[in-house]
Image (cartoon, one colour):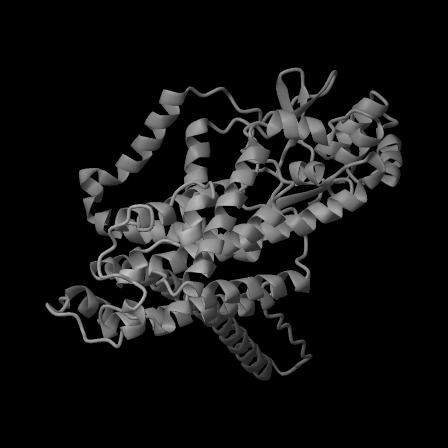
Length: 515
């Protein structure tokens, strides 16, 4: 209601009388020097361009799944960008998971002179095995030969051991001995390989089949990567310096600049975590071997227009007359999709099929990861508290901003509870054993046991419903708070203070992009 009241309440015809003697002593009533002033359009352009461009460069998606069409890849990029703009702390969580995973992989393969670029490329699905032009399998780093991560029910992940007859083992034995699973000596050869190597990636590295160095990764996979990152870092640094300099020169800082400042700080952290990760690698590095058994899952070629037509038709199916009643539910469907992806990041995925957008290849999150993420999320929210004592057009808008800033600051920390219960086994084990000879008493005890079992299962289901509902409510409140602050920042332009139009005096003499 406060938000609606702020939108509906008009600005007074006469501005409120403020004690601005100290301001008018140094700031003229009209800003008429084009070299020392800025417009509303320039402020908006400077903020929005910085957020979109620098966030786009800061995001380093995984390598798209083999055979995935460009239309779907672009849609994936748009989804990741949307999440980054709405909840940038989640991108920090994803990046930090991959950073820890890359450190582990680099340490494991340091004898092969692997750097962090190799490690990031491996964990993002950047190495694949081909037999000629046919896809065979991905080359993932594993702790044990034959492990395969598959998605289980409810979005969780379980580990299944494919043993000596898994795809990786069959490929390694075929390369090493030229044997098939039907051969008599296959099992012995597979066990010998399992003792020496942890996975097919380890085996191919040891045999010298993978010789890609860091220079090749940077020059062949990262087209314009270093230059774009340097420009983004320069622009982000420039904006942060301006935001610090404005209060020092007694110039007003707008609310939209405070929001952009929070993004800029988080972008810096993302740049650091993903600095060695290849940027938007479209196709993985092919390791081509001869005489292998191709995978039956090799995807067929798809044409651009056909895929685009399929995407459009799948969206229009819900508009058929028989389903027009579902139109009001479209926003709910989109919200459910968003929370599904958010849960993907919060829980953490370790998928071997490269279909998961936010896979990190990190089996277990270290405690220091969450401590760092919660601290960063708190700093991001605390930056939004900078305008706490700013002059707002109306008291209602000031109250809305303060409440929203507090929600953005403290709600991400509530996610710690969901992380703490993530590894819990939500199953009750109740198997009482009583030796009762009396038939009637035995039936009574059986009924009691069934009632207890039903009660425990009911409590479990209610607990899960409460937890899921709490997760959705908390993150919905976070999204609403972010939207309210953005609308409030735009409404501020109805009446800016005179000093908000002034630029930092020395800023015009330093080359930069934007204002």
